[in-house]
Each structure stands twice: as structure tokens, then as C-alpha cells.
Image (tube, rainbow, N blue to C red; front, side, top):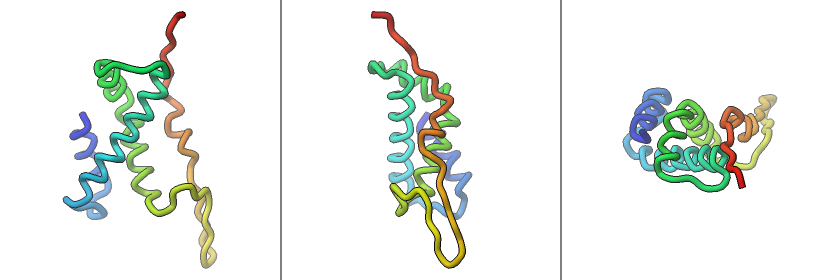
Length: 106
């Protein structure tokens, strides 16, 4: 599934990425997968649960990986102004808003 998401991101970003960027994109995809799984299964998860989360939240993972790619060099920056141009960034937590945590009965 990670390979499919990687291909989608490469197509989406177009000329902005090359063959040398694939390892970095895979790191960003796996970071997004870990965040989705940690929110979906706060008590831990199995490989099967991980696969189900990746399948269900594929678009969220895609969006998060593109977000991480776009913010390279601006990590931790919430806004930026230079020469009359202002930029502000979406809160990372907003990306994972639609991930619904699973609960366990004690």
C-alpha cells in the first residue's frame, strides 16, 4: 500500500520530485502511517490493524505526506512574512481530524 501512495504522491507533485526523492517520500509516508495508527489504536496495534488503518485512511496519509513534504525547512514555523508575502500553515492535528480512535473495554 505504501508503494501505491508513493506513486500517487509522485504524480501529484509532478516535476517537483525525482528518483532521488523516493526514500524521503517513503519516510514521510511511514511517518503519516505511524501517526494515523497511533491515533486509531492508542493502546497499540497489530500488523493487520495497521493494514486496515492504511486502507481506510489512505487519503489522510497522502495528505499528511504532502503536508510534510511542503513544510521541509519550515518545521515548527506557524507563520512567515517576507517582502509583503505572508504564509501561515494548517495545524498538523487538523489533518488527522477524521481518524476515529478505537476503544478497548477494560
